[in-house]
Length: 110
Image 1 (cartoon, rainbow, N blue to C red):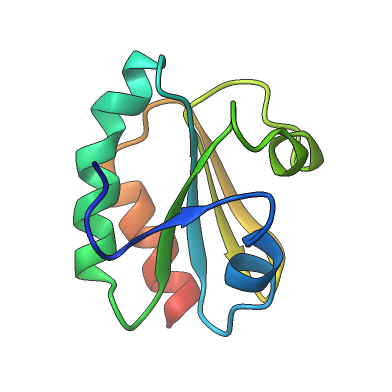
Image 2: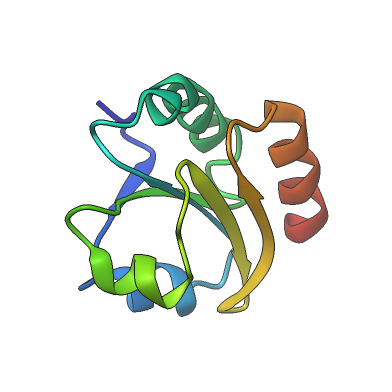
């Protein structure tokens, strides 16, 4: 299960939690059945803890929240998108090393 600092994002709260956020928001698009998504989960949890107060980190289950997944053209998971000012700032598809997320977050939060 996600750490306390990881937001559970849905079609209903996405606009408020992500698009209207003052801070950068890193969103992990995942699904329960996706093995690479499970491998990425501990990295997402760590980032949420490390960037608490500087950026938001959330997870969106693409099976339960198809509206947002379709809007952002999520065709492969895991896909992680960094939003800044309500816009897509950076997109990562597939398993991505933690340092790449950190570099993008540092730049966006800076």
